[in-house]
Image (tube, rainbow, N blue to C red; front, top):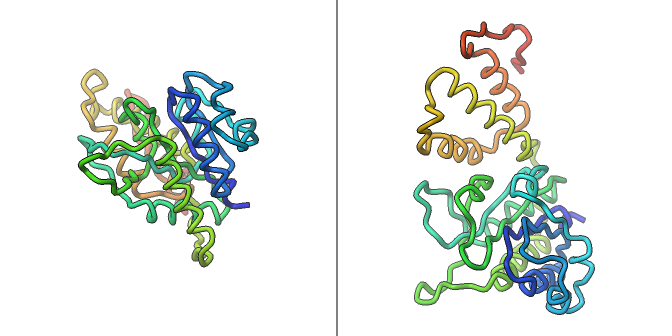
Length: 249
């Protein structure tokens, strides 16, 4: 079932009751993949009580140490956030994000939706793993939204997409976050090696480059070409790689 490929990722949730309430919201809408990043308390009786019958979602929930681990196999990631960021990220309405996630899940790919902790939401480092931000159009006079309520809104929008017409078929094969992160590490190493990036004072250069490439959603062949280019660049006095071995497809 394609809905099983859509991960609901709670990043550093503080209250186990909210974990249970999110599990209930997911089960209401047919979603089943829950991932918890560094939860303060889990498993917990309060989570089971608030799940109100969605015990199977809690029982199968994965616990990850980091956002990177939680979204490693995913080809598309969106982050829910009401806060403006110093480096602007593309902002999507709930139905837009749900449509993009559903299209990719229906094509057989793992995708994820990130929710931040109750107190401070998602950190900039968490948002770096996303292709865009999802913002629920709440009343600006009272924008505070409970974690489970936010999850219910997004899960409902995903459900609506799943019940609609099938998404268009595409031959685009997106790259997993794990492969993208390897590319970013390679890119940073090369930029430091050629003196373009000062490791002691990096400022926001890498964050901007990460945002650029995540927004572009390169496929695996494109990433292979970019990695080949990086490999061919002489770094720290080393000669360039053999260009004949670099994929030109």
